[in-house]
Each structure stands twice: as structure tokens, then as C-alpha cells.
Image (cartoon, rainbow, N blue to C red):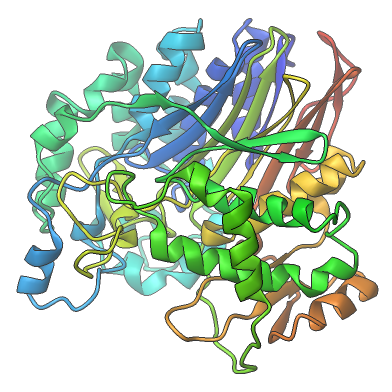
Length: 532
């Protein structure tokens, strides 16, 4: 591995981290390293990310922070009325009608035009090689192939990639080779990200998913443009936490931290306030599900949602008695988070996803791309902010985060974990600001409150290694609990970078497939490996 000389990066897979480090070794920026790592993850983590997926990012430099909207819209021809007319009573979870315009690769282009300096041909070379020559099946990929076996076996592309010739699910002893994906990556490397939206690749992808019933068109792809938008922010102690605005769920992170701030509870991750915080998380999540959608369809703004008045009102609701019934949440694995920082002052917090594990469950074979199922977040309910309307954006779980103090970014954090992301990132940020190292913050035991439907009872999921005193406090929330022993995607795979006067402190989740060490970069001189 070429050690970096101009920055640091953490990702959930060691090959992606190595790719980013190699780009830093060539003098690349944080954006360059993030793109290179993101591309590798599209090869080695196909259960979580794809070239045909979405992203949200925060991009900071010495002067300001901007959010990068890498999300796409529903096909113009698709609508709730269309699906109801064919007999659907609810939005499908998988399949062709959950595929929306993929926005992530276009976001690469926007960020690179702003802050990149290494050509795409170099940035994507590692990903091309891994796709062409093959790569070992990652631990988390092997688990998800087994967990989602019926869905994968039903799709010709997924069946060919994720199973052996005798029909056995591929394991960590096997390799996946993706020549069609390598060709798509090579086209992007030579001609830039727009090839995914105009020309032969766009036409091939649309043609392939249309055969499965999708209404996506080449016009839908050609009309897509990424954009810079203003992040939303809220004070937490002496720091300011920033995240993506709606259609992202990032406001839930700020609501959680705002609740702790209003309650004067800076050590809520392990103190007595654990008795009420899970209820607050449940209430914030229910509000998110009621109000989030395309910003053009929402009746409230991100700023409204993180105001003191809104947070206090939700906290009042959180004190209501809870039914002690039990509802089993769904296991998912759907997203990657990566963080990058360079010595010129740029910081990137990047979240990229296929939405649910393996997205739509459709691997378009001519391009090698798995279509995401971000459209599954729409509803068929008329008048709902998340109603399926052609050309609208669905609600998004992706939520990058940065922490700023005195006008300077001091930390970046993010995670996979679907609707559990706000609770996970809030715990990581709170621990960072309470003095934990970056590695300690992402390794610490977690709890989450997965979303449930309608009047179902919410359950607190807790990693069993949680300390006894915190477990006692969590039990006092008055909600059902479930203790989890094994690695579980619902607890996420978090990544964090802490920027100190001594350098960059890295934390990469041991729940992921990253190398399991962390390091400290002092200026431009490395004192240890950055394998995360």
C-alpha cells in the first residue's frame, strides 16, 4: 500500500481505504480520495453500494461547508396512481418500480470539478482492477447473500454473481468477478461521470431494467443534475453539528442532540438520561416518517424541524406511556459511510447507498450495475409528503455529518444503518465531544430504536456488551428490549475522523470489513498506518 502524504481516509473496507490512501500518495485531495474509495466500494460491497445508487455528502474547506445532493428522482412516468391501478395497496419494497434515477456518480463529477485534481482515469483504476480481476467476498457480503438468498436467486444477474455454478451462496472463500462493471467503470474513467446519464451506458441500463418492468427512461437520466445545497445545523455544547437538509433525515440527528442540549445532558450516552432518550428517538423517528419527502412536497423546513419549539413538543410526546408489546424489526444492510480529510483544509463526509440490501434486487447485466430501491421509501397514500409522484425525490436515510467549532471543522462522522443512522451518529459525536478517541467512539456499544409501522410497539435493540449501568438505565425507558450478541447491520458501520492540533485521529468500525487498527497523522508526516 502507498502511504498517504496529503491526508487521511476511513472506510468500511480495507481495499477502499487503501485506494484512498494511494490517491493521497499521488498528491490528491480529500475529494479525490473519497471518489477513489467510493468506486472501490461499488465493487467490493455490492450489497450496500452501486454505481446506480444515490449519495449525500458534506464538503468543507477553510471558508464554508456545503451539502452535495447526489440523489435522484422517480421516473416521470411512474406515480402512485399507476401502482394503485395495477393493484398495489402499498409501495413495493423491491423490484423495478423502486428504481429511481441514480445520483451518486453525478455527485462525483460535481465534487471533482470543485475540489479534485487527479484525473478520473487514475481515481477509478483500483476499482476497475478489482472488478476485472476479482476480489474476495467480504464478510458482510457473505452474510447478506445468505440472508437474502431467495431474492438474489430470483434475479438472473444476482444469481450469476453471488452464487457458484452449483448453486451454493458464495462465501468468504470465494471471489466475485465483474467484467461488465469493469467496462462501465472504464467508460466513466475515460469520458467522465456523464456517461452514466447520456449515451450507450445510459441506454443499456434503461433497456435492461425496462425488460423487468421499470418505467425509467433515458430522458429521466439525461435530465438529472446534482447540486450544492446549504446544510442544516444546530448548536451542541460548544460545537455546531451540520448535516444534509431534507430530503435527508439528517434533521433527526440534530433533534436528538438538541434534546440533550435543552435537557442539559452532555453525557447522555451513559448517564441517567438513557431512561428518556430512547423514547425521544422513537418520537423523533415517528415524526420523520410523517413529514419527510421531496422538499417541494413538505409543509415544514429543515430549520423548522430542528427548532427548540419543535424539539420540546416532540419530547412531551416522548413521555407518553408505552405499550410493552413486541414487534420484530427488519434486518437490513444498505449503506456505506466514508470520511476523508486533507492537509489543505478540505473535509468530506460521504454517504452512499443502494437503499435496502442489494437494492431493487435487479442486477442489470450489460452494465453490471445493481439498481437501487430508493423508491421504496415513497408511499401510495394520496397527499402524503412522500407520495409517489413522477419527478419527485423520495425520503432519504443518508445523512453525512460534520462538527465545527470556532468556524473550523473538528470532526466528521457517518454510518450505515438505514433509519437508525441518527441514533448511531449521535452516539458517536457525543462520545467524540466528551473526550473519546475516534476509534473508541465508533467501537463503543450502541443501542438503536428501529422504526416500526403504524401503532406497532418500538423495541430498543442493545448490543449485549453494553455496560451494566447503562443497560439498567435503558431498561427504565419502559420499552421492550432485545439484546444482540452477534454483528448486526442494524447497529451500523460507523466511520469518524477527529481533527486535532496534533493531526487527524481516525476511527473505523470493527463491525465492518476495514483493517482493525487506527492511527494518528501529524501534519504531513505519518507516524502510523491509516488502515482504519
